[in-house]
Image (cartoon, rainbow, N blue to C red; front, side):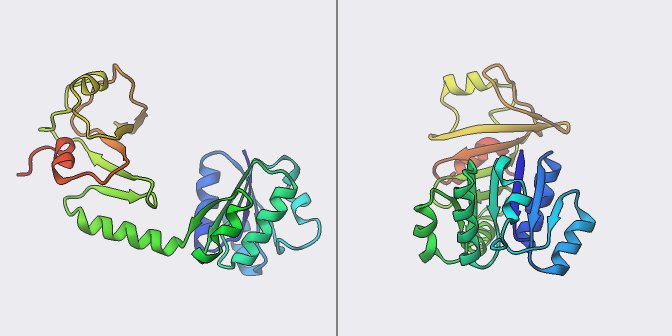
Length: 223
């Protein structure tokens, strides 16, 4: 994919690194000279030292064949301008951070996928970690569910069973599903015949927060 990133603050820089690691072609638009130079030296990306409002900048960034435009600056007016311009170029996927929730409707009218108040998301994640002291990692999706990273304990009822058996026996919590298994440095997308093993690292999506009893189903008995 050809991805254009607007802004190289902490969020933008992490985004660039993740996109490159995933094999995407990345172009960065960054008006700050020091940030632009830093990214040019550290990442295999095309870096354009310019503001999003500079004439012809999206042409230079390859917007005519871009798959996604992502704005991550701390200035909502800059992010909104990037989204309007991306819409003019008919870029399929427009995504932006929104620093003030009061401005979210402006982005919504453009059909932009948004992340509102990133700091709040971090705070919510820290709170979730504090409320799950036994080591499970949980990330809230802003009212649309939660994602849990759970290590399958040796005494878990899931060990030795297949995904199909779990479905037949209705063992999994309501409105939850196992999305991914990490096992021996490999990633496995579970199918009906996939059998679970102790120490599997599971990525679990749940519409509702999992209770302690539900979590124990995965991690097993506490010693």
